Image (cartoon, rainbow, N blue to C red; front, side, top):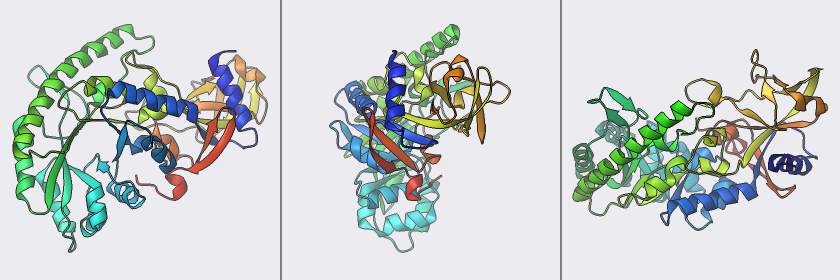
Length: 400
């Protein structure tokens, strides 16, 4: 029996009393992945990206482990909810225009001390001030650095379109702007190198593309390491008591951690290990989060149909944004239908061994987005469900 077949047998036994659709997290794999992130971080704390987990119970579990410290959130409303729930170090990774939430933040000393907001434009400071509604608390501010690789005099850009702040002088200027404005304090810098951390460098069946990605990433790592160090020096000249410099992501943990200027690493997807992380040479990890759909039809030889399953991930549309049938091994989508809103035909010889009511296990393309489809996660240890916990959705919290 292969390792994957053994996992399928465990998951089927553990959930035999539960009807699909359902979602699970294998805690043995989750904990092993957490240990690997800490190992790769080389002694620097790992800040957990909440958007990749979206379950308070599992956020608490990973933060209780050595090597993890703080959360990286994705909306201001989520940040405040987490802070009110007892998480005392929440870095909002994206700028916000939520006036009501800023009014809450600036009027509550506990929230203001726990939450750090992201800016890359002085106009965002004005929006916060306009939202205060009498709130006088000092707002903790993090500055975001554009990490994109630019070549050929800027005519070629590789990397996400995020912050407009790129040079040491630009970051130092906005640090001075914040420092001179009453009610704000610069406490950190963030630089997320998604073109390194979030792009696999070993694409199945695409050797030339894979080599091109590796060459690009090697160039990007060198350029960013030099520029990030210069940026940090420039900002520290303005803000000597800068608290943190955050960088990285699951796919670049060990490279980012090796930079002296970086004080902490961000990661989250590496806990669940969705399918997009199968294409990396820099690390291997165990799939921990899966979902099951029930077989409801057997249309013919080599075909079964499961209920639902059309759960695409965000990003540019394409096959790599789709979930993949994972267990039993050997199933594939019908190219005429793909994963559907209410039913999904699956092809392959393993279909002939599946009965009505059997479970087919899938992996989502990305990590936390799976939790927007399910209100609970069944936590598996060995071949037993040891707990069932709510996702954000299960707690009535749908932030985006």
